[in-house]
Image (cartoon, rainbow, N blue to C red; front, side, top):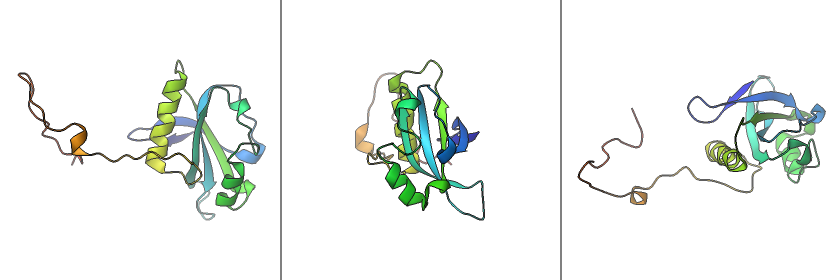
Length: 142
């Protein structure tokens, strides 16, 4: 098991060596990982995040449209690993949201689509109603 995501994170199955992995026929969010440091075998970098209605249709291990970028980034196909998260009762929209969150957090180099975690005050702005006060907490909790 590997934990990815913000706060407590999501419990992903894996990591497994991508070269020898047979994808299960399940809807899931997945992450492709590269060995980050040969001296530390349990240290990985998240290089791609995706989601699928059925993992068997994604082209694993190396027929995926981004597989050549993974191999190049990892400096060889044997440095690639995969982990996946089934979302019980989750819909496609739910899996997509988890994938977007992970892309925003890890900024994987092989994803073409990027999501920014930036926050701007004008997105909400000041407000006042008879039952609320303006927000008083900072964006960076201490």
